[in-house]
Length: 139
Image 1 (cartoon, rainbow, N blue to C red):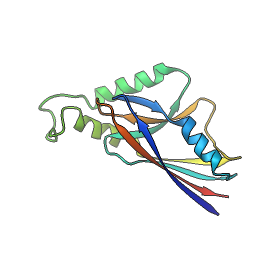
Image 2 (cartoon, one colour):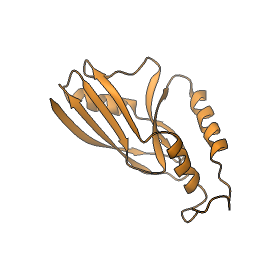
Image 3 (cartoon, one colour):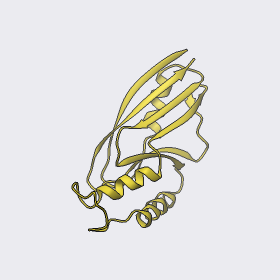
Image 4 (cartoon, rainbow, N blue to C red):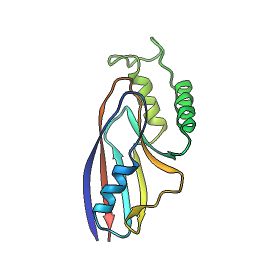
């Protein structure tokens, strides 16, 4: 059994879904493991992770609009507002999604479906530098 750990930096342009499938696939392939389990962990409380369709961009647009309705920016609505009006909604959006993904690995690659991609979901309006911890265990 072998393990590997890597920190993947992702530059965002503000709120939105940023696909990280390609750099994750490259890193997994470089580890030389045939089978195993990949964990992707977002090291932030105002961003999250999703496995989602990567073919039709309107899926991502609809996801963003849905979360806007669930956790809207509204001055005076939240007690936690010291970091700006988008901060508490960002925490709520992260709580409603995921900060960790577990993805099986086979034949040296993440076993994603045909239309699946791995996304960092940035919930803040300003550009951010996010860090994802990638951990692979297998043989």
